[in-house]
Image: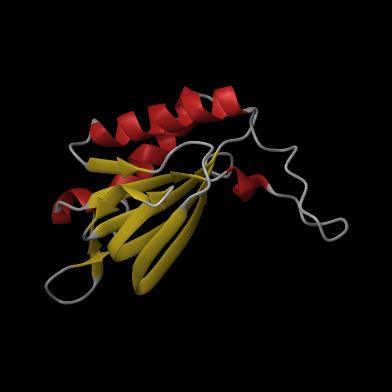
Amino acid sequence: MRAVVQKVSRASVTVNEKVTGKIAEGLLVLLGVGPEDTEEDAAYLANKIVHLRIFPDREGKMNLSLVDVAGSVLSISQFTLYGDCRKGRRPNFTAAAPPELGNQLYEIFNDKIRENGIKVEAGQFGAMMDVELINNGPVTLLLDSKKIL
C-alpha cells in the first residue's frame, strides 16, 4: 500500500461539481492499494500517518502529530500511485489492486484512522475527482507499507 501524505492548511475534493470532503488543518492522503495488500498494510499506514511528527511545536520544530494538533485527514483513493512508467510513455496500472479489493482496503484504512479519534473526509472511490489543497510547509512524504525496514 502506498500513500502520498501532504500537510495542508486546507483541502477539499469535488466529484461532479459537489464537494464530498473538506478539511482545515491536517493531512491530505492519496492512497494506492496493491494486489498483495492486506488489512495489516492498511492498519500500518493509518497508524504511521496518524502519529507522524510533522506539525510544528511552539519552537517551530516538526515535533507534533496529527493527534497532537487535533487535525483532520482528507483521504483520496489513488490507484495511479501504482502506475509503472518505465516502458513507453503510457503508464501501466497492472500493479494496482482490482477495484473491489482497493475499495475494501481504502475503507479499512479510513476506519483505522477514525479509530484514533481523527476526523476523516473522503473522495469517492473510482470517481474522477478534483482535489484542491494548500500544501503547508510544503511537507510531502511518500510511504509504502512494503518498505518498512
